[in-house]
Image (cartoon, rainbow, N blue to C red; front, side, top):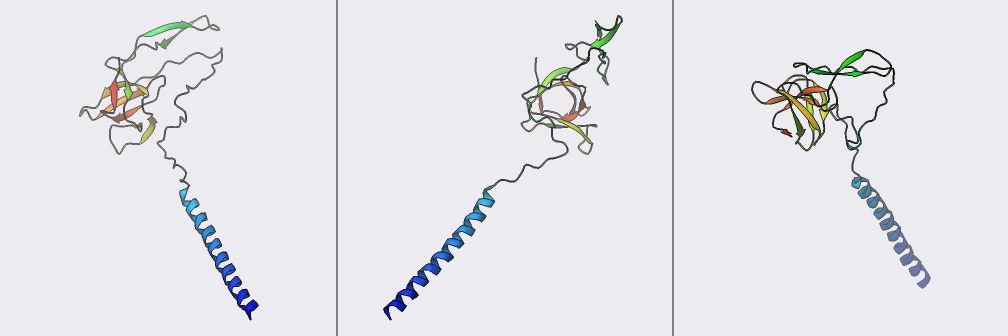
Length: 169
């Protein structure tokens, strides 16, 4: 009789232990699954440049001739350079020259800015510019709510909301 009662108590304790152990294991599994943050979503207007600290290095063949940078405003005075493979000189835009009325600036909005093809919120996005990135402010809209910018060192231009840039000297 004593051995039957001992078997009953031992069986009951083992059953409770197994149920508690499996319950805790399942609970820990779900708690750990909810602690993992989801992957960051990607949007169409995200800046494709992943590391803004490292400048992109492009190789230029010696046989290619540099192309002048297009500008929608008045063209700057060209400086002439001579290609080592060509005896003729070709006009290129000087890196220090700015179009009339344009000035250098820096993006102050911490999330960066979306560039649009027209100075309206409904306009199509043509790219983006990161926070603290240098830009050239080309013009302002008549209502002073938008600025047309060019990313420094590129020919990418677009409209951004005004007051999100700061003039630098």
